[in-house]
Image 1 (spheres, rainbow, N blue to C red):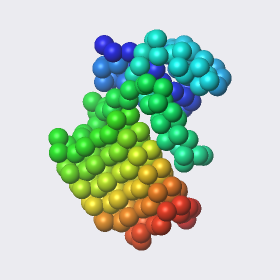
Image 2: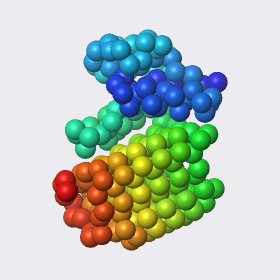
Image 3: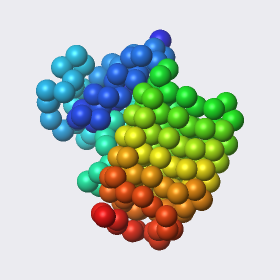
Length: 201
């Protein structure tokens, strides 16, 4: 079993650990975070992100376990920095999820429990397809996105890079959401959204 380091030790990390342990392809050897907290007592905090180069000796596989509600660009910046240092990013798919053999999942992306990525869908790098989210046929999700719990991207929907779609929000088929967009939870989106849009209600 290959070893992997997780970057971020908050609540989202806790959910990622559950997926990784169930998938049984990688063994978590430690977490990187600014402070020790109560979420992940099972695994050691190796240190903070100022010493990322030193952790390569433990493993050159990493997964970014930060959520993306407060800062749309943080995940992408961290991903690029870690790639330059020399880390590799496997895609991680829960055994309780379904990803069509005709769908594509990018590096560093996680597909969590109960999620569905249907035929012809494309999901970019370093993206979260969270618990019970649906990415329907031929939908495209960009890099560094977070498709939150229970949300639905209907067929042909397009999500740009660094965008967040809130829990239980539904995108009508063929809707386009630009880069760096934030869409709140429990909404129905039936109009295209330009880059940098923030939709709260």
